Length: 120
Image 1 (cartoon, rainbow, N blue to C red):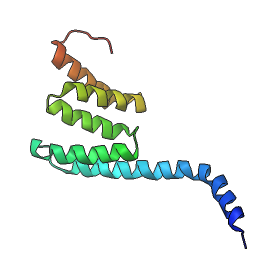
Image 2: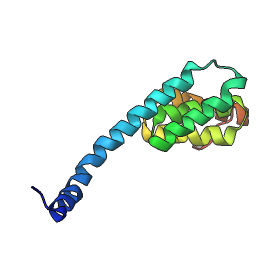
Image 3: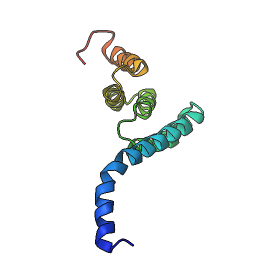
């Protein structure tokens, strides 16, 4: 039988090993939420619900590129370009080769600057 002290020590030692597993599970749940948001129709009336779901995904997994990209898309559709740019950049920071986020970021810059080149 373990003493209370021995169990406490065991938990303290195992916690760092469990953190990556827990982070993976959170990001997996975030992916499920992102898919749930995508399952809703791409219509303005669903944007508030989609934003809520995607924000829940980002809360679980702050560097989830698809959640940030999809949230950026909604903000772009709502013409909230500042927020769209922020989320596209976060998607790119999380996954630098994420071509959809790069393309969408370029689209926002083109829309807002009449096609002139901006520094990123």
